[in-house]
Length: 133
Image 1 (cartoon, helix red, strand yellow):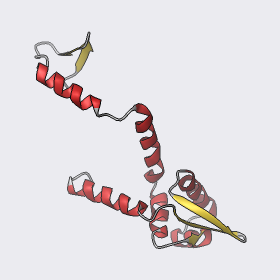
Image 2 (spheres, one colour):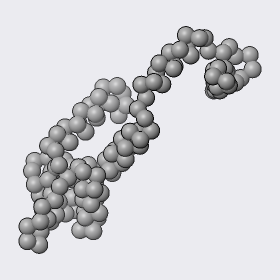
Image 3 (spheres, one colour):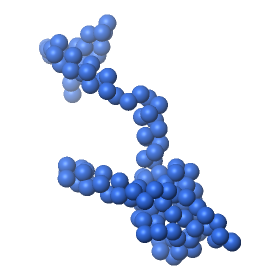
Image 4 (cartoon, helix red, strand yellow):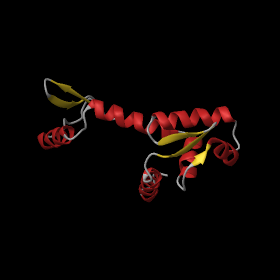
């Protein structure tokens, strides 16, 4: 594996006998590095995607795609215990993916934005086309 290190602003190969990158390669890398989002933005984006890393939460989002459902309907559809569904609903709600509305003793959930599942589908399609899935 080729590794590089930066010493005094110069990029050089670590393995014996390897050539150092050319100045044009270094310049290109510097241009690319300028467009990287700042750490705060990257951290926020990373946190944004964490709630989508669980199949149960994705199923909940797909169920809510067609409209509002009460917790009992989600429990019935997914055949999971109430505590499990509530846990996942709380994660999705805290992340801003869904909203809840209390009606009597029931809480009804809906997507915070109707386009959320479409964005997930689009990202999946892009990755499928590129052979990533």
